[in-house]
Length: 233
Image (tube, rainbow, N blue to C red):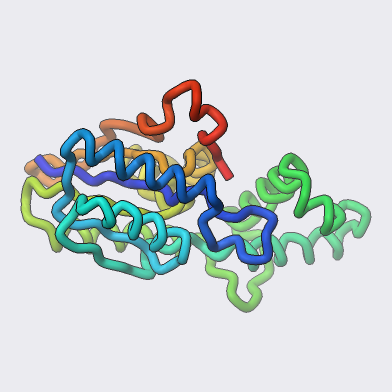
């Protein structure tokens, strides 16, 4: 039986001018995961990742530990672009009630305010309640490309292969929803629970059936001295 290890990238740079970069915590999370797997002697037949900087940086750190003979990159594993979703939701709020739109500085500095705004925007996106704008990928298209990436990955691999996939929380949520038979809203909610640099492990049966073995594990961070390194964002 083969395995797919879905790995969320290390913590990105929330609140900075360039979110799509690993923070110092994100880099350390990735290094600790690499060293954990090296200590176990675990190796992959191949590691895939998306094209986003935070995904490629995490995969590059893992590859520096010689965990796989090669890595491959695919835009199909990219996270959805969240800024167009947030802009479309902000425009909708301003049109309905300008006072309901949070102040930009508060959104950038208060994680609780941002999470509430983000949650509302995401549910509107999934329900197709956002007006199409430039750069806004429809939810149905995002889900289709994530599932297509999984199908393509499975078609390329030999039976019994161990595959690493460095991607993002939204992609992992979609793939879990497919494996577990969940709807789109649950796919999004699953993504919100996924830790940075966490591991979600799938088993590929001989018939091609995929089952969930582990979800959202962070064995490389489960030590009292590393508690502050377990992050969602």
